[in-house]
Structures are given as structure tokens and as C-alpha cells.
Image (tube, rainbow, N blue to C red; front, side):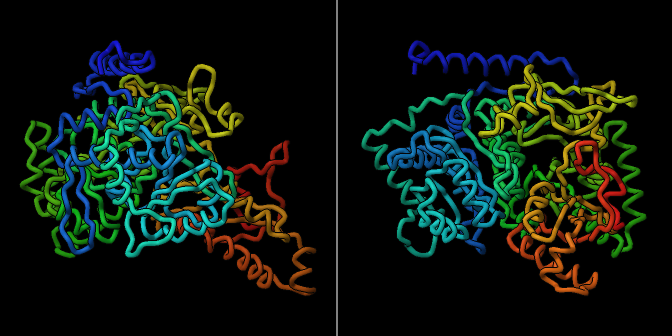
Length: 603
């Protein structure tokens, strides 16, 4: 399409993208070393230009059956499938509708996301760990008309649609063993779309994306209807694609192993979409128990993970080394290599070949996010010759707020802001610790249908108030010192919102008050969810009768808590109960003070 035929909105988007790339090129900070970003206006533009630039490159590696080898899928095939699927979705009435996708990481998930977002409507990624009730709630809240899902979720969505109290009108399965009424196969839709394209249909292919409108709707959590829906635009996402791979190197030769769930912006933006932008490839892991096997098959160079994953990998390596009686030898080799690195000589590939082969032999970068990690783990992985880098982000920032430069990382820090993006601290205390605020074109549009909640975190100057506490040192590196928000973050990077569990506990007749918090396990490997409750003994007596004991009371509480846990993902289950005898410590507004140490005691 010629320049004079482009809409004013498209011309504005092109100018904005070119300006973003210019900001990258003119950033004078020494760690901004990769300045070859190309301007992209939206995800559709990204996919089309990547297919043009990297058409014969492998975009995805997918296993369609457990015992088969990986199937490579090239960039030109991805674009073809996305165009066909999007065309078919529009032909079935999905233009400008909300379209959900749910399932394990796979090629079908990826093209469902792209076809929905790149010219059809708004994509709504759903958490595959949610139960049927929570999924139905989000379908209703987001006004979803179509869901694309894997076989595990087929019955759930058939039942939801059959209930006739949701806006669902189209169900699409990634693939199932048998034909079922009212469910169409994804492959059938692609065939249908190709026929429409052959007959001249252009509505999807020629669709113009408004890169400032909501294009992605993500729910941050999923119980009791209280989850926030984060509204992201194409501009939010492609901002990160253009500015992030500037302080770390990503090339056509790189390959990600995709492990974390794609419905999270961390994996979605930083692995799936980032790889497509740079001409790299993504191999979908078959599941956590197959990581070792898949690493050998895929031989990736990049991987995103959460602290629990890296801590497990690192401890397993040292455990095996000790079994072999080689701990002192390995530590000596590390000291020698670290000394050699200071004079420009890196012998990692030779000295640590056996360890590097565990990761497939080509791993160069491991990225950690989602929760805090012990800096010694990152430094220890780096000792083996793999660059372990930590970042900081939130769904509201699509998700990256800061990241460690590859050539000068600080494992105690979450890194520096990318070109054109800003971080500041407000209301610092005497130690210089304040609330972290973030600003830039990556910051969300707001919370869906929650203007009051949006106003709490987005100020009039465009700063997003994260609720996290930290400071910035003289080099510009950001350090986290705590979390102002109440969210409990497990070692696996899962968010647990205590208010949601407290809401469920409040529905139990004999529970007067409750306070939910996270408590470190003695092993230090994870966080356990604790519920401290105050009992209305009169109400409990109506159930237990007179003369009940503390043991009777605890069994009664556990019976109700078990019912709550039954429908909750494992990370959100309440695993410890405290029956509190004393009132909670409260503020003047009679709200429980969450960080008062005494409120966590069994008193």
C-alpha cells in the first residue's frame, strides 16, 4: 500500500515506531549495544515484516505426538496459517469480538493468539490452571465470543457454552480424537480460511490495526470475580520488542525453549513474540518432566524461567558433582576460569563441557523473572559459562520494566530501564527507599471496567505506581527491597492474592475475620499459604454442639478450607491454619495491618 493511501492513524503509528527506533540508536548509555531494531507499528506489522525478512527461517519447533521428533515450522508458514485462521474467524462473525485462547504451550496456541490479535479482534489469554467456574466468570466479564482451546478444555467450554448464559458462540479445538457437535477443529478453520483467501477475501489480510486501542486483555488472577483485567495495546507490546533486545543480544541463530505458560506476558512477550521479531525460533517444551530430554533435542540458546526452576537445576548440578567426588576440582576450575576472564580469556566451553551439555550444549542466556532469586544462583550459573540475567516486570508493563545488561549484570539488582522507558522512586524514606514508578509506551491502558482501580495506579503524568519498594543506585540500576502490595509471590513466580482467599473464608458462617499471608518454608524452597482466622464460637457451636474442643474446631475449619482448596490451583491452596484467640492488630480504619509481625502469630 502506498504512503498516500495510508490512514492518518497508520501514518502516525509509523512515525512513532521510527521515533522509537531512533531513541534506541541515540541512547548514549554504554550497555545499549544492540542498536539494529527495526520499526514496527503493531503485531501484524511485526509478523508480516518478519515473514518477509526471515521467511525460510524456522519460527517454531512443535511436537505433535510424544514419541515423534520436533516438527520445524518456518516463518512463511506461520504467516500463511495466521492469515487463513484470521480470515476464517472473521467469516464466522468474529470481527472486533473478544477471542480467548487457552491450553498448553504449542504452535496452535501461538497462531490462535496472532490470528485473533492481528486483524480479527481482541485476544484474551486464559490461565489453563483455572477451574470451570473461574473460566466462565472471565468469559462473561471479558464478553468473549470465541474460545480456542486444547483437548483438555474441550468439555469445560462445551458445558459453559451449553449453559446459554455467556456470550460464547464459537468453540474451536486445537485437535481432538473425535468430532463433537458445536466444536470445530482448528485445522478445519485454516482450510476454510485458505479457500476464502483463494476466492479473494481480503478483510483480515488488509485489516488496519489501531495500535493505541486495547488489543490484549489479561486477567491477573482468577477467583471470586475480583481479578483485574489488564488492558494492553499493540503499542505496549511492540514497544518492548523494539527496545528490549538492545542491552542483550538476540539473533536469527538463537533458539528459545518455551517452558513457562504462554498466557503470562513474561513468556508471551519475552520469548514467543520477541523471537518472532528477531527472526529467532521457539521450541515448545513438552512439560516440566521432559525438560532434560527436550534440552538435548532442541539445543536452545535462550530460556526464560522462574527462581524455583533455576534453583532446582543449580542444586541438582552440584549434588551430582558431589556424588562424583569432584566438588573441590570444580571449584578450582571456576576460580581459574574467573581469573582468566579478567584478562579476556573464557575457557568455559572447555572446562565445563559436561555441565553445558546438560542444557543441550549451546545455552548462552538464562533469563530469570517472576519473583526474587538468590543472587548467588545467578552468579553460580554464570560461573559455568551461561549468562544468567535477572529482570523486573509486571503484567501492567507488558511486562518488562527493567533488565540487566548482558555485559555488566548485577545479580543483586533487577537491572536498568530500556531505551525510552523510565523508572523513578517516589516518597523515599531516610534510606532512599521509595515506591517504584514506571513510565513509557509499554504501560497499560488501564484495568478493564475498573476506572477507580486504574486511577489508583496511573497518575495524570502517565507514571504507573507499581506498589513495589526499592531504590536506584548511582549507576542507574534498580534494586527491590520489598513489596508494598499484598500479593504473595511463590518461588515459581505465581501470584496469590490474599484478599481473594479472605473473601472465600468470609463466606464461612463461623469465621468472623481472616488474614491470609505467605510464610517461608523451613527448607527455604517455597512459600506456604497461611490462613489465620478468628472464630465466631456461637456460630461454630450451632454446628458442633456444646462442649466442642479446639481439635473439633480445627477439623471443622479444615473441612471448609478443603472445600476452597478443592477448586484452587496447587500454588493457591491454603496449607496452614491458625485459629487466633486474640484480636488482630488494626489501623484507625479498623483494617488489619498486614505487616504487623504479631498478626502472624498463633496468639
